[in-house]
Length: 231
Image 1 (cartoon, rainbow, N blue to C red):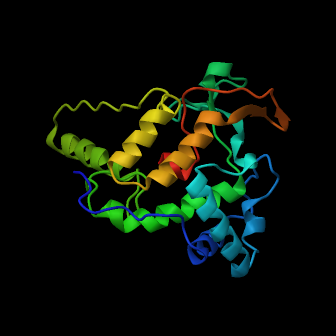
Image 2 (tube, one colour):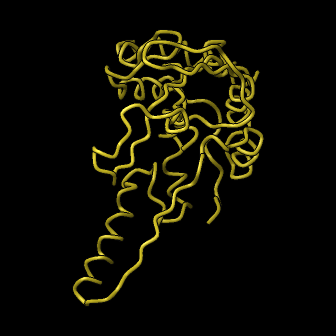
């Protein structure tokens, strides 16, 4: 399974950006620039005409606005859904937290619009048994298959072993150069891939606990959990 047709090229246009902005949720958290996605939802289409013009320059230079390079990382406790509440830690240690990447609200609009531009192209070649991040699919569909096997084994009186696996530190292990090269290899616009690559190579991250931010630091690996581009 590999693409046989080229992916959409160039940045999203004003109509695509405006449509994506209207999908934003009012309760979504802002990035470090303070803008909430719900506030961008109120902007008229004319505002996105200016943004579309600006994005063409961004793609040409492969450089993003400075606000995009400052990324807060809220630390969310990891919870084992199979553990009863009595066994779950009330105050988890540092290694029992998941760090998200809370990108700028404006940034979130742009790859969101790109995702919808690429939907038909993705569905034209991607394996039909892949479910996560695709329209008309849900990751939970895998669980339905497992449940069917369990029910069949119970009905037939057979023993059944199921192995559920997860990649350890999957997003954290992603190396920006590899991601960029992979994206361009499957046909993603090189200007788009290199623009996002520049953010991840040069961004400053800030761990956030509650309302408090830690000191900024850089990292060599990692794709943002919560970034549509990562999916």
